[in-house]
Length: 75
Image (cartoon, rainbow, N blue to C red):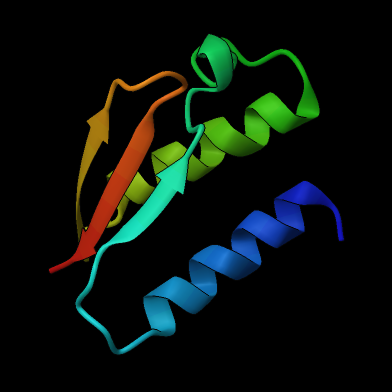
């Protein structure tokens, strides 16, 4: 499965989940590549980060640990 479709499927399943526990996404900056995307995989991460940021159903915080960890919580 291509990475973009995999990320979309995972995101969709997380939103469907009934739990109010956190969703943890690792490596969301990928050595800064998500900030200045040039390759297809960089754009996938950038789109994922933007989708989470713009989703009004969630609260999120990014921890600057190595390639960053994104903690997401459904409201």
